[in-house]
Length: 136
Image 1 (cartoon, rainbow, N blue to C red):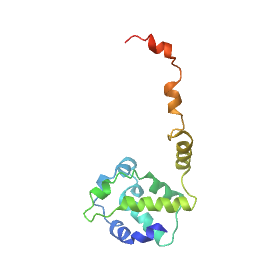
Image 2: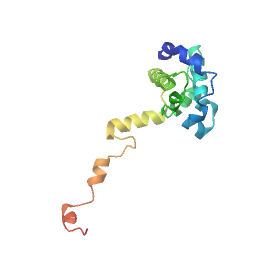
Image 3: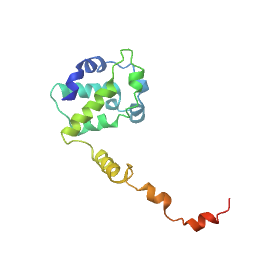
Image 4: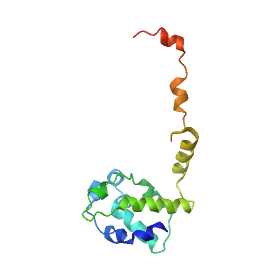
């Protein structure tokens, strides 16, 4: 479990509200689990043996990974790194959210997460003759 290596971050963040106002995902959803403190409490529960469940996984993947919590942290605790490590644990357990799995498959297949081949769409439908006679 990757989060075990960063227990000091969990201890420091789980009851600290100082970066709450900086969290973009929390300020959008207004769910406590989407704020840094909520995510720290989730990870602390996982560390204590509770394991990941669907709600925990969703909260950890709702993080935008923007780093605002780290930028505003007086103790310079790197919670985004801990969330990244927890996502690795989640993937290892086969619990990655379906949307994330689809995005990964799309990127591998089409090189973008929408699943559309943009190279083809940018070049299709226009002949070189049309371009030569185009008015500018």
